[in-house]
Length: 269
Image 1 (cartoon, rainbow, N blue to C red):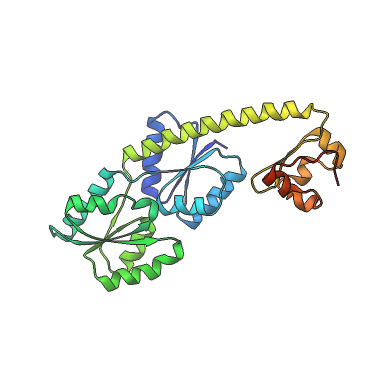
Image 2: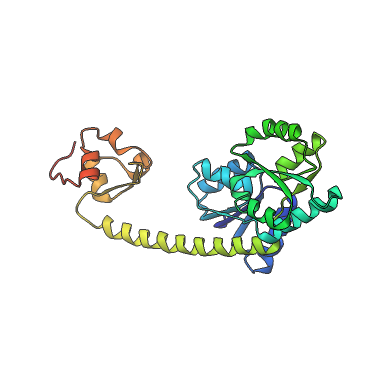
């Protein structure tokens, strides 16, 4: 598969993103998918297994992919001041009020700067922060109780709110925001490719070592076993990759080595 992945929460954003990817000459580098919130997580896990270098997404979908523990770096499509201005102006036009009572319901990464911006725009604004997809329905009830003139949010939020009779405005991302995210993803992908090449050379080098070497990640799970270690232990990398080192060799004082820097020589169980 292509190394860069764009996961769009809704069709309009997918279409806009594909156009900008083509305009930037990056069509050969990106694979594009449609996936909102939990569906986006499923896509992210799939492309992670297939070796993606970087994921580009937006709003709650991006935040939930990160929270789900997907280990591929996620570049978030920003909500620019221009995007906020257009949404707030659209709220005034839709409600036909100069100073409408506006509710904004979104995940944290979509509303970081909006409270300050709302003061500049002279609008009444209340933010309803979401932390998970499951909170949307209960939060909609809070919005209904407060009786705003209009609600601004992401695609899933606005669709549900509209079914409850609330006027809505989709907080969209403009071309500049998309362009910024795709170019950043290219830089992240390039850096990851350099790191992978460095690790490939390093592994080739340690494979020629006569010493047995086992590499673990931050969770103390086996990442790499060189040929000498395979001969010593009688197991191959494919058999133990991702396995906890402590579960295989519980008598090795691994925590003492890592936390106190103590060296143990000539010991193997």
